[in-house]
Amino acid sequence: MKITGASVNVCSPGRNFVTLKIETDEGIYGLGDGTLNGRELAVASYITEHVIPCLIGRDPFQTEDIWQYLYRGAYWRRGPVTMAAIAAVDVALWDIKGKALNTPIYNLLGGRSRGGVLVYAHAHGADIEEALDDVGKHIEMGYQAIRVQSGVPGLASTYGVPKAGMRYEPAEKGLPSEGQWSTEMYLRHTPKLFEETRRRFGENVHLLHDCHHRLTPIEAARLGKELEPYHLFWMEDPVAAELQEGFRVIREHTTTPLATGEVFNTIWDGQELIQRQWIDYIRMSIVHAGGFTHLKKVADFASLYHVRTGCHGATDLSPVTMAAALHFGIAVHNFGIQEHMAHCEETDAVFPHGYSFKAGYMYPGDAPGLGVELDEKLAAKYPYERAYLPVNRKLDGTLTDW
Ligand code: KDG
Ligand code: MG
Image (cartoon, rainbow, N blue to C red; front, side, top):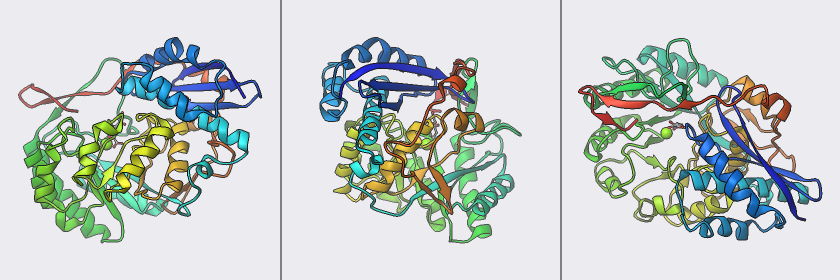
């Protein structure tokens, strides 16, 4: 089999997505997601201008060699744009392999290690009461694991909480909006949120929380300690992780489990974190970390150190990545949990898919390959619209992590 052509589709059914389609001489094609929130066109151009010309004529079954060719062959390694482009190619090739062999991708990754993929949903509210109502709604929908975020009294906006009456979607059209941040206010408020959540819902639901890279190690250590009575499934991204050693300080002070890695692109971003057992869950995703070929190696490496997977799955990861994550999650032995932030109706219509949700678990379906399509005609009705993630400032105006 040979690759005969490839094209990049950029569309915006509710939000922007970058999708690669690779075609072969046998009429089989594969899809890959290359979406990088707020930087979509950089990946689209990287793939179109620099990657597609190198793919034509290659055997799509050679996923390892093509991965190495695109990674080592670029000389300029790593980084979110490069790795999202490589992921788009890698996932499309695995989709082709699965279709050609007439089997779902999970069978090529080792087969089923479990019956379903435990997922966590997002609950949020402008204050604790609203957030708790949302937790209740998600429990009624069948979720067994729920991330809880609430507005912080005194702050005009908070990460993870939508503007009144709107669906939560971090990227907004137009130039970046500016949020406000106060660590003091956040640290005073967050333990109360979880105290109330446990009081109302008891211990039979997994609770998660995302600090979104905003604390210093010692601040995160304090929060982790204060959250211990509420037995979180994890505290996510307590600190920005460029400095992996920052996690050592947190780890020395608290038994609250730690998760990080949604912004990592290769194993080298989290190698020390894993090897030193400073984290419990690695959140790297298929789209931002080079596809199945690299993420499988990360998971296998993590398994040696009792670290489990907890892949990023916000709405900026397209249904193509969601399907890929479910094949991955059902197959890898050290799977922990999968994030599930449901897409809007427009997105689901543009990407018809076979995966499903039932009673807290998701299932990849049994279609050959990924089990996701791209309706190109419908996609054309939703042209790309420039959008950015917000930026964040402390109360005195200092720019800080968002
Ligand atoms: O594009 C950025 C979002 O995907 C990110 O802010 C979502 O932190 C996130 C999460 O845990 O889902
Ligand atoms: Mg996060």
